[in-house]
Length: 198
Image (tube, rainbow, N blue to C red):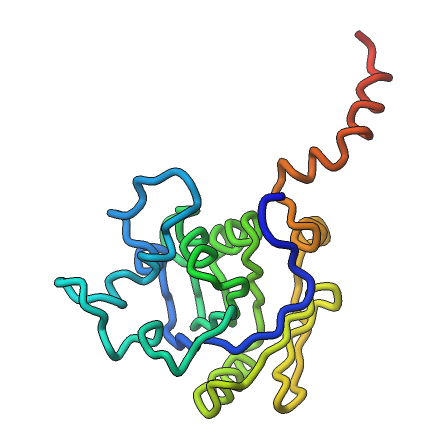
């Protein structure tokens, strides 16, 4: 299994209401040497989290213990810039399982879906409501229901539907990447191949 199965997630959230967050801000290029998906969380938003002497920047949200959770709420156009997979790896490795935004860059969105991070696109109005709720109460919980394709602010019941391709939805609910999916239908592939002319 490539990653944990994703069905229903209830969690507090970390608000990051900055627009046009690009992949170099998510994981700076100097940290892309590794080829495995581990250790990238340490350098998630590295230049925003740390000073040049490696001391934490106290005003950055990930250094504020008031906010925590498995959901990251980002500003519009999240994940723009280069196509590096490492940006999605860093978010997953840090502990986030869902990123919410009013708009995602397509390549970043697909990279997330391939490794077990659910990108939930909502309306700008709903995104603003989430920011307001979490800033007002850091303990506010959000529910992400993948089978029903809904995101709900539990304190008010406000809810929106979100889109996801049926294939990616099935994979996330099973914890599959593309290779896992092919392995899961291996008998059907073998059966089909047995009827092909030699």
